[in-house]
Image (cartoon, rainbow, N blue to C red; front, side, top):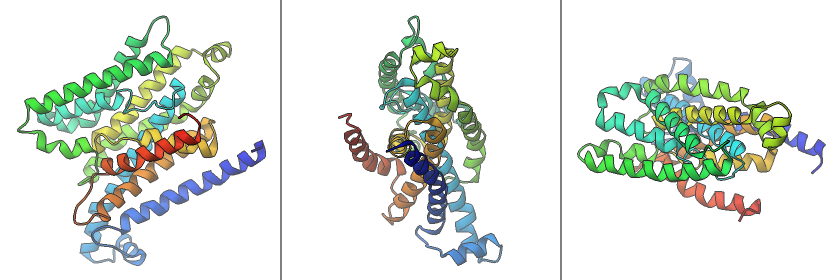
Length: 331
């Protein structure tokens, strides 16, 4: 594919991706145990619809769709940044321990210190942040190479998983409340959840725009970036911390949803290439669309059972990720 064809494809993707997100959002609002037509949804937004429809749309589905969008956008952005910074296709908040750190902090808030539940997003971010600093510190030896960070992250991820299981055994009488959260899901998410998640998620996504230039420079390699006057280690640490903020915001509300940060950036790379000017925005939109679509399918296709979206994403994401790896010649 020549440069002109690649540019045309990227422009088409930039047009198609937002349109896809709008279609998926409408699908999420319209379909469920009670399906609504476009006209019925319109009457709700114009305040002329029946109270039952207004409750379904405004109190249940719209906030859930918005939370799903922010969750998918944060996870996909975090995955795209980590994969670029570490030059590793397996880098993902769930694999290197960042999500596990935020998850452990959130679980402690829910079952050990329930009086702190109102601080859940802040605590999840703090847990992810501390985990990132520990991983970076363990990997540091006159510099922190991507390989060292991955190895340290996998080890910390295993340790945090053991600590989480230990907490669940110790507080077995309270564990029932966090099981849906561990599976990853958006059931019952409301305007309240959106309100305390949004500041962290929007801040992280806004900062990710500023990360496009340093992420592109790091793709050139450490030596080349240093020759261009870049402080490679500082930039790598800042991008990892930004990924922690994004992962913590998603984990605090949606639980341990996996594969979004792994699969979406891979799929976008196949279509748009490595340039973060296109990769990051398209990953954000693609992640938002994927989570909303998967959540709608999980709650409407298996009626009367509502399947946690994390389970559905894992079931679909694992084989799709293997397909992407095969297509890229990695396996």
